[in-house]
Length: 438
Image 1 (tube, one colour):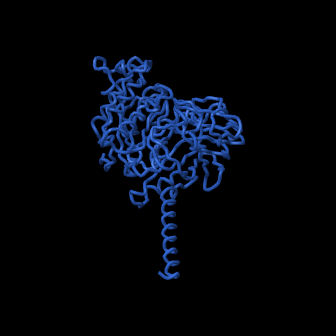
Image 2: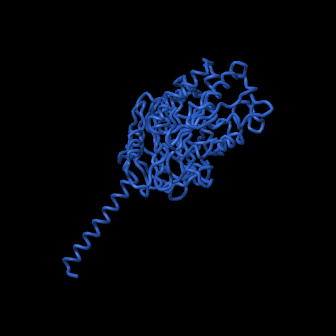
Image 3: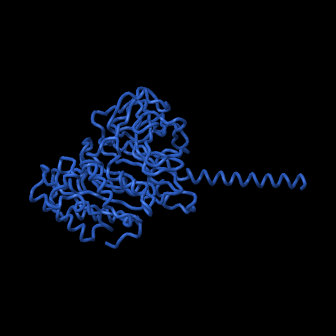
């Protein structure tokens, strides 16, 4: 081989290496769309990349529910370390931060992601801390009412693991966008401790998730994302704190472990007090925007959505002002399904659980619940039905929860009840086949 031919061969090999490197970079980070979460989702759906290149899917999410009470100045000068639990793993991660309920720009000058050293622990696992950037910059200003997506970072994220997502804001930011009933302890520290892997500075505990609304992972195994939309029953308000015993958690466990189950990330978009038809107060922690008004943002705009599971309607019947015309509730559910069908996403719908013994129970409210359930079971509302009512009710008193499935308030399930809800969903209904023509 001549020297000239040797140089040519080396140059060709170098070009191949560069091409492979670019392909890997684009595969991992090419659809980040920082500052526009919906754009990231659109790019993912329009991607023609081969299956071996993997995809972005949702591993964890929560719905922004309201502005945190008494948080008009934000948490300036403090680090917030949110603890969240993954549903599916991947080789890279990115986060979404929301300033939906803010009244001024939210300045984030430091953000990190890490694996927790132990469940619910603010200490990071050794070597897992990663600095996050936004469009290549270490800081970002999030306009009031908007959200941003970080650049991706390489991190081996396990399934069913706790992550630590830390943010720091140096200046007052106005009301804090939060999710009040996390059923998980998160932490705060004085000063910028986002890059501190130790948990010793995080001395203030919190039952809330703040600003953080999503964690996506890059996976070569996942088929897509399942989004659960609901109220306090989906939020898991009576589940054991820190145990990840909400029904979407148990469903994620089934999808990870059962043979033949679709490999989906599972996102819990429940808001306690949520209704199909009526928006809650901006500062109320108990209602959130109606299911209709938030369906696009909290369901369809998530990464890699393949199927939705909706369990809503009981608060329309119970909360003032009550909606006691079952036809209105059913039509609201149909409108959400039509939104999903417009994007080719099928929807599994849950029947409304019994609430006999609860203070809101009475002949009229029970009659409306039965009418809604009758319409759901008859078809023409959802693509498939998860009959939560039939699975959890007491056969001898069908207007009440079975005692083993009752948390004690006669409305919300116990941990065993949430597990039974997850068992009730037929995995064949989650395959993401074409939506029914309703």
